[in-house]
Image (cartoon, rainbow, N blue to C red):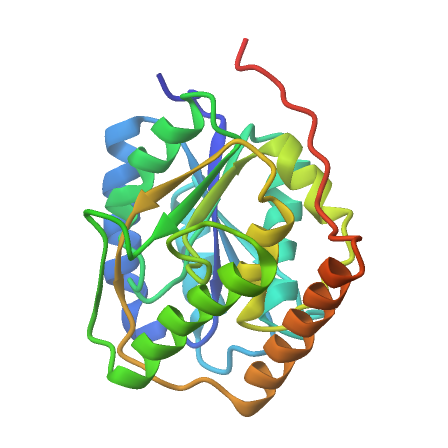
Length: 252
C-alpha cells in the first residue's frame, strides 16, 4: 500500500524545453493512476531556455507540480539537494529522485514506492539487474557506467549491481540524514557517493530502463569523481570508512 498523498519525486530541470511536454504527460499519468504524489521541478541558472516558464505554467494549472527556483546552485548536486530539501521540508515520507528528458521512465515510480513500503529504507535504480536496460547510449557512456560500478565495488567494498544510476528513492528520515552530510561530489559521482554512504541501510535495487542519448561527460566531472573516489578509498585503507548512520523506523 502506498502512502496516500505522502510521496514526492524531485527532478532537476536544465534546458528541458524540448522534452518538457512528454515528461509531464508521462508523470501526470502516474500521478492520476496512484491518486497521490507531488513533483518538484528544480530549476536554476544552468537553464538558459524557457524551462522555468514552462515549470511555472505547469505548477499554476496543476498543484501537484511545484517549481523550486534555486539560483544559488553551483552544480547539479546542489540542484538535487535543493529538491530534496524542498520535499523534506514539505513533510513527504517517501522522496524519489529521477532525471528529466525521459532518461528515466516515470512508469517505474510505483515499483520504487512498493519497494520502500516493503521494509526497505532505500530503493536504488539498476540498469544491470534482470529487467533493467540501457538504451541509446554509445560504447563510451556504457563503459563509464559499467567500469564505474566495477571500480567502486572493488575499491569501496560495495556489492551493488549499479553504483551510478540517478533513479532512486528514500524514506524521509534517510533524506534528513544525508542532507546534513558534507557530500564531496559536485557532479556524476554524487550517485555513487550516496550509495556508498548508505550501504549499511536496508536497500533493494530496482530494475530500470535508461535512455542516455548524450555521451557527454566533462573532464571536470571525471576529475571530481576520481578525487572523491580516492578520498573514500583512503578513508577505507585507514580503517575509517564513513557511512551515514540511519535509525530504522518501521512503517507503523
